[in-house]
Image (cartoon, rainbow, N blue to C red; front, side, top):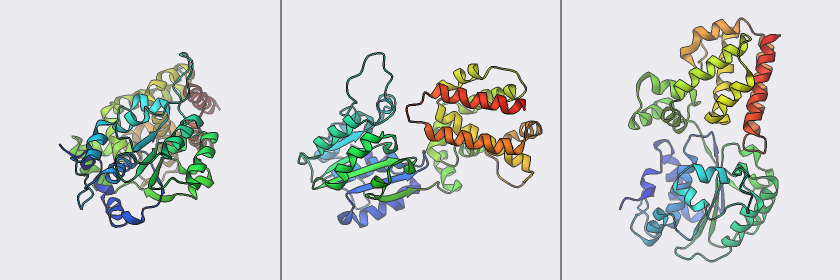
Length: 356
């Protein structure tokens, strides 16, 4: 039986794992894994959870795959691993960790209600109750919240109790793309581990092992902001074709054609996070093109001609303001605001900007 943990570590995060292996006896109770989405934070957290729950891990940190803890972990039924995620994530992701998150659903809701995109207080209360039971199989209990920055205010306040009075032999791992969204009271009680974008050569080498190579791999990595897992996800979803549709919509709206509400309806199935991330990079390219920087790298290097044609119609100051608005819009994702309304607002603003 292969150990699941053997494939969880990405090459650029192996040095971090080595640090944990050296300092296992001094591992803090609470850890915050923070960094851009697509850098392997969740995979690292999953590896660490199995490493802590394995009875006989190898010297390199690979879980043995044979002990009772490893078998239960791989089956998604280890009683000492507790995972909390937003309902919308654990229902759609299909990962091993999502199977554990099924134990901590939000309180009952009506059939008409949408799946929650936040971690709610009732989920945290259930976690705290479970955390105070003694480990059933191994020597410790592991609790994992991902993404922790999706907790609403009440949930975050409730989690403080767990941080201030941690159960013995327990570890709490928080994974966050936007750690600044977490209350300072939570951040200050966690040991931080930052996940940075790996060097492009390492990211491209890994993408090649996943079946991507050549110009498309480089372009996808640029579009993903340098995050290898995000680049792979873009490739698997056919994002290059989707990007063409997004760009066509932006150009039509800029020329006075098209309907921003209809565009938003087309964009929503792609996911607001993905659309706004691309839009932010594309706007950066427009600004760079308008400033005649020349040597600056573009997020969409293959679109230089189309960028030059469009930037002549726009005011640089207004581009900066609109780009800041998109960044603020991205910061609202994961909250109660409806994604389609957010996309509609962005595209209406773009249409108005281009009419001035």
